[in-house]
Image (tube, rainbow, N blue to C red; front, side, top):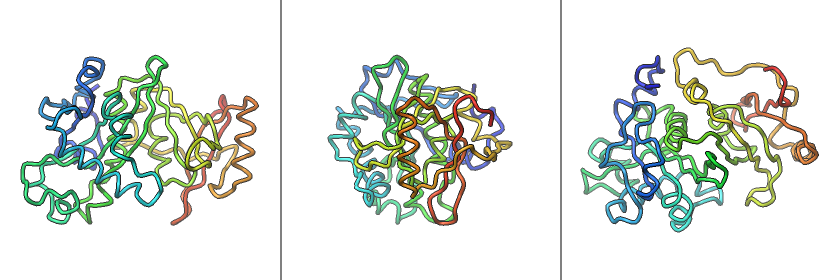
Length: 285
């Protein structure tokens, strides 16, 4: 399946036309990855290994992205974590541009004002390979739309990148974790049906974190990128308010006893975190 041949929404086509994909991973991993995901070639000059000094500028850019995205959430990623968990054993996939193609304020944010040729990562999806065959864990998703302004923002960047990243990984099962109050839950759900593995996760820095599993389907990976995409609109059998601590714990207790739920959709609440509509596994949407 080639992405450019599909009826993509304009915002995604704009990203493909104005940005270039990149990969950071140890070269021994490369033969096991799809370096031409959906017909989008990751060229050799944009394949990096964090064990080489050639990657230093791109890695620095990733940490600027991470600081903007997670610096106020007590989840800022130390450089050693990015290396140990993502850049060496796993993958970092994203889209970027040369510094010369960015506005001055963005170049200042990335600290590349003096280097026109610097390749600047405008997004990243970090994933870690699991011991389970074909399984990966999505660790981090960031985009420069918190840096870019107005018409210079790249709408859809945080939707396109994980879809491409999952394809690069060639995973059949995608795991992840996110907070109930996260504004990004809907982005995770666009990759496929999210089976809730835990609703309350005290092993995490933020206990009210849900862990999930997506059984990867190539068509589902791209469906949200198409012009005719319609988000699910049904009423879930269970609706969770992200601030309802008792409901979250009750759901988790049920899961511990063997209940299986999946996320149907999110429901916006103005500026507040979205409500989550859940259905039991086996129910019809």
